[in-house]
Each structure stands twice: as structure tokens, then as C-alpha cells.
Length: 623
Ligand code: ATP
Ligand code: MG
Image 1: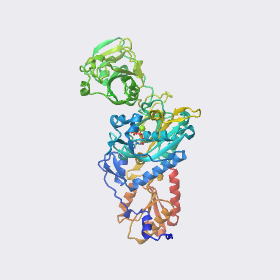
Image 2: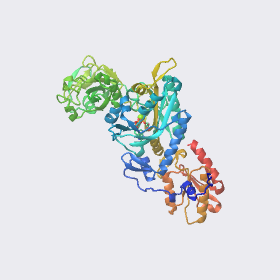
Image 3: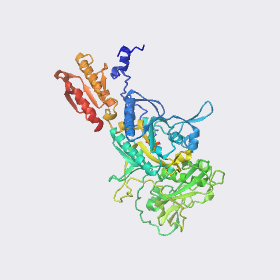
Image 4: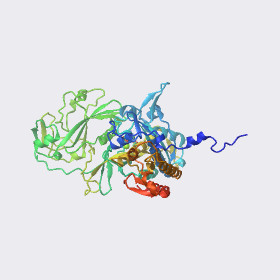
């Protein structure tokens, strides 16, 4: 006969189930000083307040307070993804190299970008640690999706990703092991993909707003795949690694990697006739303009790049651009990837400006650096099996319409002035937009608007992939007419751990973190100023029990510490509401301080639970 266990017949199970939210019993260590390893406020604060500890470069332990924040962010993400009709799953982090070879990304990810950690197992099989999961999910889709009737579907997971970042930094902002929510939609055509993408766009807006953060959705670079829409969600903060260009009318916002604009007007060239001029010590635009008394808009600047493709072929790229403009290497990179097949390659591995040492590898004679013209002779390049013998010449749109321009004479110490395209210099065939849009430029959609600039932290990226992976990996379905087609895909990522830290970067003061209520590790902290005062302890204990019972997540600071230390710690860890069972108890009240505004008020003990419950519920929606 099976004995039904009596409720609570084991005292230890009761204790074990009781959450430990008394600071005296928690692993709780705060630091008074800023740790030397941290550069930005959020990183310093998370370390000081005991949320995270560094274990290695870009590798962090999420301590109990942090883990609560991460779980809250994850839960908000989960709820919004589910509401948008996506289904949660969990994919493997160990990924066989074959999948990545099928998609053609193994070489790029392990060698070129080198972002993927790879390893060889005891059976001599190559594996990668998942930096992202397109390959795995496409394999699943290939296996399971047969018919249009199964579409559309959207699968997501919340999981640790591994990326061997070149510069891991700023704590959780750019880790080598971090938590991401990634989702992948499978659609039958572009129109259906657009609907899935729009649903994700809305879900992302909801997620970030519910986390209590101010953000901007911006147009993003979609790599060399071309054409497909891509949007990033930026948390605006000084410490952001990304630059966002936007217009005040709210109609345009883009990552600088992608942004377009109208360049400033050209000043009329002071030169009217072609002439070769001696220009000693003029190897920069600034020096040249001073010497020739002209505007940088009169100059065609020529910059040499070395592009290495995945078949080891090196192509020397000569980019001509207007003197006042900067080259956007993301745009240039995308153009060069598109040209890969011209060089029997499939993708680009590296793009660099070759220094003198690098030049020695392929230059027959020393280059007139600083004095190069758009027509620099191909015979500077020594022939070699892996070297393309001709320069790939690209001209940015800004340089195409220049008249009477100044440019290098291919001879150190000399420039040409008053030059024209096609008369004096051959206009390169490849005309592209490869300039960096700049603050103050006029906007394309409305020339009365100028671009302003802000720093942002990218917390999400949604992207229309199209059929890149499904075609490469053979993930097809049969449409209504019985025709076999590649599945159209979208992918959508949220940096869960980055978002949690970005929240701190957006919300702190000199005393510490100010968590938005929705993602705070606890919503209330009760401080007992004097733990030897029985009344203070009893009231606190009672409120603590009641609040937690009501679902208000409450910490109890019952440590044997000075009251001042406890107040400082409460401010540092950033709990939205602080309750103090101090002197006001005499009149049946406790002091309640709102962390964000520092406003303090006395509230009757008997009303406290209900009041805080209401505040917390409101605080989760209004920030
Ligand atoms: P970034 O441009 O910052 O390198 P990414 O474009 O490589 O990011 P995605 O592949 O789009 O990033 O990943 C989705 C999300 O994961 C990003 O929007 C970001 O929030 C987060 N993320 C990416 N790399 C890291 C990292 N190294 N550490 C923490 N979060 C990251
Ligand atoms: Mg990105």
C-alpha cells in the first residue's frame, strides 16, 4: 500500500523550500571602491554591487542577484515571443562542423572572423561551440518541414552563446560567453516573412518597453547578403559601442555602418587648368588643403586596401573618394564580398590598409603613399599565384561629379590640380556608396533635416535572411502547386545579458544602480536599522513575510551592520523601494524611500503591504 506523505512531515523540506532573502544568510559582498578592471559605469556598478564576478576574459559568473535579473528579462522575452506565436525550444551548443561546411560558414567563422570556438573530439571530429544557430535550426527544418501547410513557424530559444570576440569588454556587454534569445522563422514566401518580421519587430518593442528602457529602432547593416531588411534595437547610452545617426523628425535612424545621407556641397575649385604641382610634405588632406589653399571637397583622395578572399587570393583595392569624406569599411566590405566570384572565391576573409611591411609582400617598388592617383599603374604589383595582378578600382559617388579636382601624381611630393575625370584620369567602372554618413549631413528623405548622432547599445537585431541557409543546406518545402521551393527564413536575436547590463547603463546615479521595477532582482528591501531592537525586528519580519506572500519580492536586511552601511548597500544594489523599520515605528509607521527619486514618506504599517503591492504593480508598467 502506498502511504500518502503527510503535508510538511519533513521539517527539512520546509526549510529548504523557504526562499533565503535575508541578507544575513545570503552570499552578499559589496565593494566600496570601483574595481580597476571596469571602464564604464554599468560594469563598475554590477561588480561593486556583487551582481557579477569576472572569471576570465569575457567570462563572468552571474551571482544570485544577477541571475534573478536575467531570469526576469528572459521571462519578459519569453512572454512576448509566445504572444507573437513563437515556440520555445533548446538547441545544442556543440555543433558538428559538417553543418557549417554545408552553409559555407565554417572557414569564415573559425578562421576569417575567428569568432567561433572550435574543437576536435576524441574521435577526431571537428565541432564548434554555437555562436549562433542558423545551421542547426535549418537542419531541423530540412528534416521536419515538408509542406506549405506546416508554414509559417517560428522557433526560439534562450541560451548561452559562445563567441571568441576580438575585444571582449565592458563586462556583460561584450562577453565571450553570454545569454541570447534567438528565434528563426520559416515562411513560404517573402510576404509571409514580412509578416513574421513585423510581428518580431512589435515583440521586440514590447520587450524593451516592458524592461523599462528607452530605445531607438534603427536600420542596420545586413552584411553582404544584400537587399534584405534588417533592424537593430538600440538602448541609447553614452557608453554604447554603436553610433546611431537620426533626424529630429523621427523619420530616419540608422546605424552608422549602414546610414546614408547627402554629403555637404562642393566648394568651387580654385584651379581651372590641369597642372602638376610640387607639394612637399603634403601627405595628408589637411596639409594639402593648407598648402594649396583649397577645400577638401576639391580633392580626390585615394586609399589602398588589401582584400584577402577565402581562396587565399589577395586583391589590391584602390578606393577613390572625396577628400572630406571617410570610407565606410562595412559598406566597402559588403561590395567586396559581392565581387568574390570574380576571383573564384566565395567570401572575403580580411580587409586591411596595408602598412609598409604588408606592402613589401606584393609591391614591386615602393608606393607613393600620400600621393597616389586613381590611375596608379598596375605594374606596382608583383605577379604571384595568389595576387591579383590588377588593382580593383572603386570610386565613391561623392568623387564622381568633381571638376577641376586635386589628386595625387603617383610621385612622392607631387599632386595634380585642375583635373577632370575621363580627360586626365579614367573614372573607375565601379561606382559605389562607400562613404560614412556624418553628423550634420542632410537627410536623403528630406533635405531640410540634418543628421544628429547618438551612442547606442545594440540589444536586439531582427533580420530577413531569405533563402541563404535553406538553399545552401537544402531545406525545401512543397508549395500549394506541388512545386519544391527553399524555405524563406528570418532570424531574430536579443542579447539578454547585454540588455540587463544596458538597463544599468541607462539608469544609475552616484549612489548606485536604479533598476526599473520590472527587472529588479527584488522590488522591496526592508532595513532593520538596529537588529537589537526587538520591535524593529518583529515589524520587519512580519512585513517581509506578508509582502513575499503577496508576491512582492522582498529582501530583509537583518545584518549586524551599522544602519548607514545598510542604506548605502540598498542604494548600490538598486532595489526600487526601501522600507525602514526605524524611529517612526513609535507612531505606527515605517519610512519608505523610492530609490529613483529618493523621495521619502512615512506610511502606516497596516497599509504598507497594500501600498507597496500597488506601487510595484504600477511600476512594472509605468516607468
Ligand atoms: P555586435 O554587432 O554587437 O557584435 P552582432 O551583430 O554580432 O552584435 P547578433 O549576432 O545580431 O549580434 O546577436 C544578437 C544579439 O546578441 C545582439 O543584438 C546583442 O544584443 C547580443 N550580442 C551579440 N554579441 C554579444 C556579446 N559578445 N556579448 C553580449 N551580447 C552579445
Ligand atoms: Mg548586429
